[in-house]
Image (cartoon, rainbow, N blue to C red; front, side, top):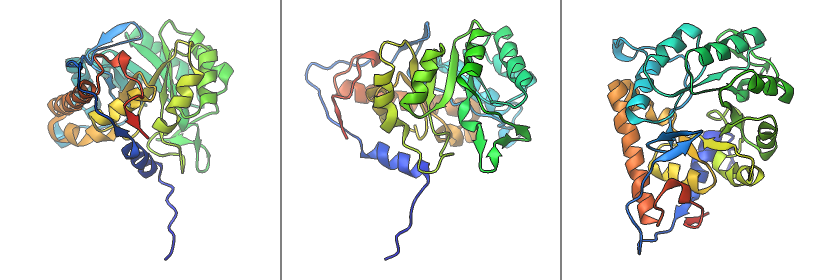
Length: 297
């Protein structure tokens, strides 16, 4: 029989996540509370929006998908993220009223990086950050929608941290080494991610979470995880393995495309209800209590 090698990190991630099982603890358990505190603000759940870019108007609706899921974040009282866009679109996102993090691409045009970060701060962003997993592409340095990317050093990232009063978040961390460098330069949160499998054979984010969590003990850096988060069970496993929150991504796109803001609200509420059920069935009254004692790996 011919052996076919499988390098798709999304499939590897899904298989790893599904291999983690959950033990039940019901006696003395209570109905769980999914509220969290994150970077000084209270949110209704540890579920966050993805940092999507370039979503147009679905089904000829008036608003873009970016605006619609940002409105859903406001209704849900969860932290919103957005990715690559020009300043005029970001101002429209902010009009939705959600607490929003702007993740800026590592443009070769450093003046554009700084302009977009400064614009976000002036327009009331909750935090800003950079998407470091788009530095390289198959032909060398990456080119995204015609925009050339550039290598980012720790010193460069530190200069962004120093340039703003807002919390700074780095997206695309997939090793303890990068996580420690982020902590060293003053980053307030990281997103553990392989960006939907850009790196062949990329380790599942949940597989490296425990190592990253241990490396960051006492460093006051929040940890978010994404890639393949589609259910409350996925969120629960991420929290149990060391994350403070998890971000949904492509799993919410069908709901967004079909029903817009209301579809996203319904989808995230289902995920959160599933999370609350599993927390209650495993003896965790609040999110900060969750550890890996009920996981079988």
